[in-house]
Length: 252
Image (tube, rainbow, N blue to C red; front, side):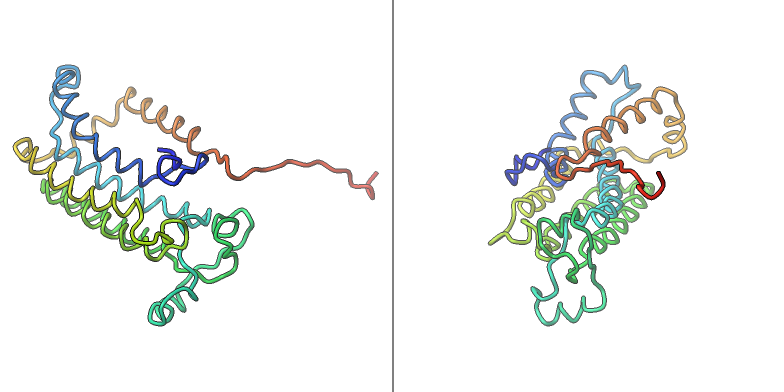
């Protein structure tokens, strides 16, 4: 999803917005596939286990993705001088300082070299911990618990972390659009569990699932999907680069 839909920006993407739309449509896409392609798929897809797996995968991807945020300097935290005395003491020895004009924290936030809240690192640790917890519950066949816990904890932290950010989200006068989406996703997750509770299966067979991955068609599909995502999201239209050649006059 483009951020122009939420923040009126044409050249940036919004992961939060994309996840929100994905959560809204995923169970109904699964239901549509079950009704129209169950024979081709070799059986129906249970909605709650599928959503539980997707929720854990989302937490894992978001957690690892924050490493890219650290590299680029986006999703940056507030400067320490913007914090309360208590929070300033808390982050006094635990903060980030970004250097480089192409870092978003520098060209947008004008905070190059200033100590800021390491909200990206905190989010990475929180989300990866949640992902591991959700995965454990999934492997133990506690699908509803895995989905609800993962969604509730990730979106609760998303709501709280917005208050520590210095970008457009942290500057919201009351609450941001992303905080509203976080609350709605938790409520929607509960509604989905209640609506599809009869479709929850008993146990899973992780060995069978892993065996399905070792299939040329699946591998080629994943590689093609990765290439498409890389070409779409891996190229920045905000930053640019130049290549220059010159002559060493003293070596002629």
